[in-house]
Length: 460
Picture 1 (cartoon, rainbow, N blue to C red):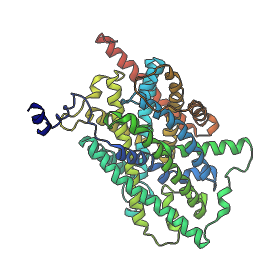
Picture 2: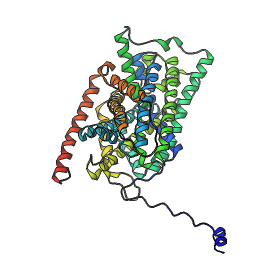
Picture 3: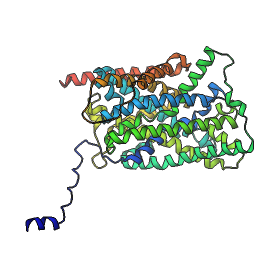
Picture 4: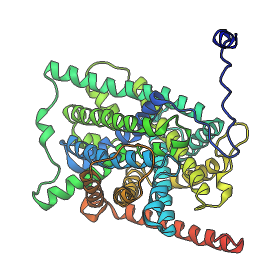
């Protein structure tokens, strides 16, 4: 009788999941959402705003720097995938540096560089938003700096509402910016089929010399073009808000980098095919120049609006990632614990959002798109070199669960290529090194203040 009763009685429903612990983040991101998030994080300001600046450095063969940047991105992405699989926590490069080298000062500097790279990227996006694309819609009547500041404040407010709202907004904006790039590729296909375009430009290099001069020119263009690939490293800071991150991240990051890398090379080919490199270099809205030269009658204002959505996406994600980095560092006690405070109802890192937004507003006034983009790339290339070394060091720290393991040659090549692109061989302007140096000086000062506070409290 007991057996019969047991077999016919419906099983009790599973217990509801426990509520999030105080201070914990909400796991709201699934596999498909994460793939779109990574693609949306990489796409945006880099390809929409700096394509022309890359052309100004390298000439008509502007697809070459994007192809090289794609390879460098894949090398470092493999290291990030291995590390986020081993340690699925927020804080990203800062966490990996601390675990590998056990040097709190180096950990803080790496974390601060990552944060500043995100903020300089968001500032570049804000500048791009207030440039030629907006001017196509409104003219030149609006003050660019005021527009850029207002832009950052509005994105901070959206970020404050919650990760679900921010990531879903990211999905919508990602679809829009992918549509814009699809339009560019369609225009290129039409030009090829119609026999239009200047194919000889595809192999023209800006440098009149050969050897060293040509090499530094290509490296400089690659270093700037690498700004278009940054973003995949930000996604690891969402590990604590992702469902099953050990399985989800490898596919999401590799698919994201592969999709965006392919699109970038094709867009660069189309841009050079249809527009002279000098015209591209003189515009903060280079893809709008491609649309105008395409001869298909696509509405210029509509494309400008699409481009504005694209740079909005870049800024939104960078502010999100910087605030999550603050949260992660606070939990690691690299920053004061107050930086890890979350909004009770929304479970969003409120203090981190306010802090990084204020820094982004300050950075808006320090340079234009090219300088801020190059600063972003330089800071991240330095970080990538450390991360690629860290993944090798941490092979001595096995974990119990299975995770992706990169072939050893990938992090080795990743470290070497990152250092080359970060070096003076890349022929970047002195202002980039000065801006990065000032940011590091600020970081060192903050480190000193934090150490004093910890010692005062007896926590050091």
